[in-house]
Image 1 (cartoon, rainbow over the protein chains, first blue to last red):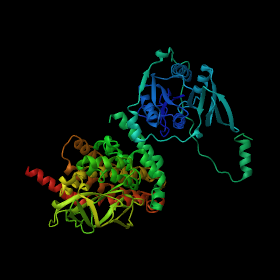
Image 2: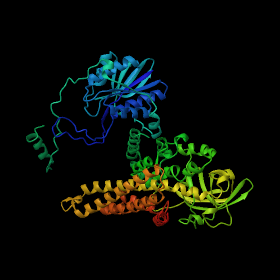
Image 3: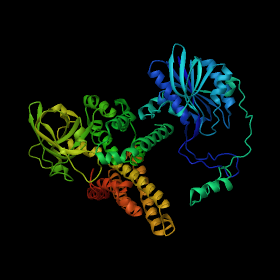
Image 4: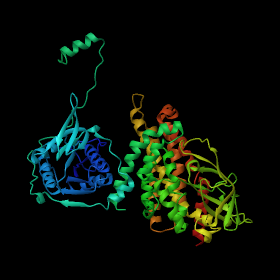
Length: 249
Length: 384
């Protein structure tokens, strides 16, 4: 069975992001970029399935600028067998990504697609679900455990009330939550070896997909800065302020 | 290595240092031990074989690439660097430069993977800076040599599987000319270890005496084989330039770490109603440290680049080692000063670095030996 893992190049999670002065978006000039952390978890899970003998091949795919090669190289260093880069410059929305992935699924015919549950830049949390709808495949989102057996995937999901276990028929879409695994480090020897693994280049035209945005961003603003708090003298005073000033009680 | 791969490599190393090594610094210092599971992680990362050629399972980094890696690795406790230091440096380079094909095949893959740790046994109780005066004897006995003597402060000896032992093969000689380098495996009858040395700093990095008593090794154990009898000191000298640049880069990494910690502290710590970083006397210390660390970084990058281009950098590598090791001493001293009382107590780790970096001015050639090497190099060049 092939496992397909889409990965996204995002601002590194250690970077303190800044909004552009004109409010048109986040300043990406000279900012360190890396693989979306949830996608690293997805890659790790796919590689573990391969190591366990459940999967035969792990294919990483990314939709983004030419520099997204870097995150594919990381995926290859972590253990993916080959990679596909669909080059798109500029913003690309979840629906366009899902349509492109549908095209990749049609040619690669994977038995399982594992995605990160969301990307840490736009926090959309849509691509996996949209891909599931486009393909008509089962979906199991927010996975904290995946067990494959007998053409089915038993997936434990992290939901508000606790854990939910579901079973879906393969082929299926699974999205990875934080506690699914702890991704390995791309070791230095494996980074060198990854250089020799195949990385195919594609364009949206290869899949007949238009990636023009359907949404327009009106304005991006920083969250309001937290103002200093006050100390209250007693519980009674606290309750009073919560009623009269904060208006929450 | 193309620049994309080097960038990815340095990113991966930086992340490993930040997420796996720095959080273990205090534990390593307290217990005087790197946890075995962490040693395994370091092994899997490929850190033991950075400077060993790819053909033998290493990464085959050029000097320029190796110093970039050392800048990153230097940002955590030198104990971690010490663990991988001998396999990348003095413990393997002699074999790489002068070893026979059989010796390379037998040892380099194991050293690159970290399966075997290498130690470099040159220093003796009465032969340190004056290494040519060493007394360990190698008496010829047919196809063998019989080694007798004591080696001192041998880094990684307690966990080493292979020792490069320097011994006098020319009995009447008194200088460097009569010395050979032997590859002696741990467990060879007659080789034993002393108790672990108790040190000022670099806890978790271990050194001890290595004793040789009627230790028999074949002639083929000489690095380069029988053809290189009495050439051991030349082999030792060849590995030094690389080692000096590597240590210099580690000094810069440590300085950059201390500067970062000092800056963070100075911007948070408030006295007289403002962060102490607003005080000009504190700013002077930060600025001096930044300037000196930057100067050292530039010297090292330039010298590494010229070494990769095949130029003789012996004098300049000694300049780098002298300047960078003295520089990190000053930076560590200022870091303690900027941190004030917090710098003197153990919780912030600053006093630990202050003790750790003291060694850099001593090993792989003291500052005074570097000065002598530099001055002699200058005179040699002037004579033409």
